[in-house]
Image 1: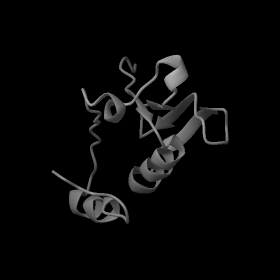
Image 2 (image 1 turned 60 degrees about the vertical axis):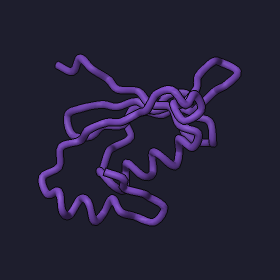
Image 3 (image 1 turned 90 degrees about the horizontal axis):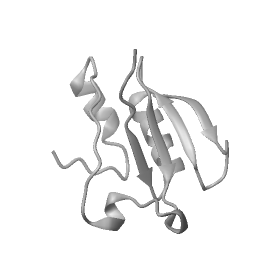
Length: 98
C-alpha cells in the first residue's frame, strides 16, 4: 500500500508534466482541470507509485521553493538503465547539475 505521496508546485506545471512524461514515462491518472495553464491538482504514476503536482497560486498562498528561496524540491526515481535515462533526460532546456 502506498503511504507517501510527494507533491510539488511549479510555475509551469503543464511543462513539468510534459517533462516527466517524456523523461520518465509517467502516466497521468487525473488532472483538475484537465487542460489550461492552471493545474489545481494532477496525479502522475511512475510504476506503482503516485506523485502529485500543482500550479503556484499566490492568491491561495501556494508557492514554489523557487519563489520562497528557502527550500528545494526533489524526487528520486529508480531506473533500470541509468546511462540511457541520462541521455533522454538531457533534453533541450534541461540543466543537469549533479
